[in-house]
Image (cartoon, rainbow, N blue to C red; front, side, top):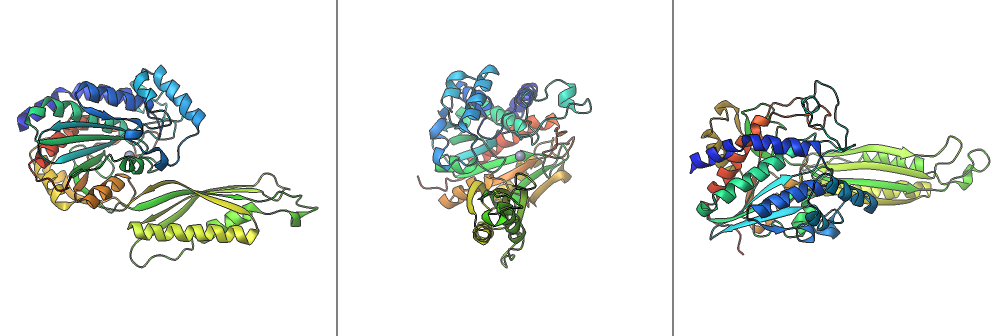
Length: 441
Ligand SMILES: [Zn+2]
């Protein structure tokens, strides 16, 4: 069995690289993953998976930070021009780009794997030091780049889908593959949870290429300390007036925004654990001699627990309201992303370790039980939902030599990590299927 999985994974290594490079060339950002999702859905259907698409995979009412309708329409057209499947893309209108594929293989637990699909909002480096450019697979889509490795995640996910379909006669349970849009900005997991994508899941696995496993051959078996976070915009709307002749008739939105920014950073820390708040953008004003009628803050709160983050965000909203009141301006707060706190199940991480120790690709000294993320990943939203139902899960980091840090325009990873990634996840699915179901149907 183990040998069969290793052989299947090794046999698809070249195709995984080709797939990754194709995805890298046509990156799509949050809620616009029409081409990517249509290729995923087509491949899953061909391999015999039952599909959930559109509103069955993503709850429209829960979507945050969705681009305007014209932008979505333009991206759908682009996806078709770039050889996406028009019929499948049509079912994703409105940005419903999540895909769930399920393979029912008799009695046994439901094992789910989650792969994120979106690219970053940035332009890719165009110099010969950057391999994707040198070898001709750099992004052709302006303002979009796979700078986090999610192209590799999709390639691995489709490899896993193919391998499990080939071995389906030997599976005992249900495999559910969840391809998630909008991980950047922590937007995609919540609407998939709300659509029921995690219902009945006993074991959930997810992971990332690189991150804190920055050398090929390393593996982190479990990730802890996901920070809960809320991403939010605050707009202040005042009244413009002549700065010399009639400033008293104006209502100054710039001062309200500045006051809110300073005082959000003065919110008291929480005694029960770590927290963060950052106002990353402050735009305000129109002209030197006009009382500023507009102000915009883009901010985020984080907390070691969901409760701590909720506390910081609630205080930030109070600060915004107070500042608006002080300067006599209107204000509105819009949440554009959110994620939960959480960590991996150490028992499941220990099983991942045992599997990895049986794979020559991973160096024994490079296998680590767990690391603290100290960042946010909306996998935590899915994990929290699985735990709520009685299931469990872990998040791995598959080591890969990185050309540059994540979210940098020179980002690139070592493609030799793709096939072992497939082998690891497939073996984990078989391993989880030896465990009892945990969630009552
Ligand atoms: Zn990422």
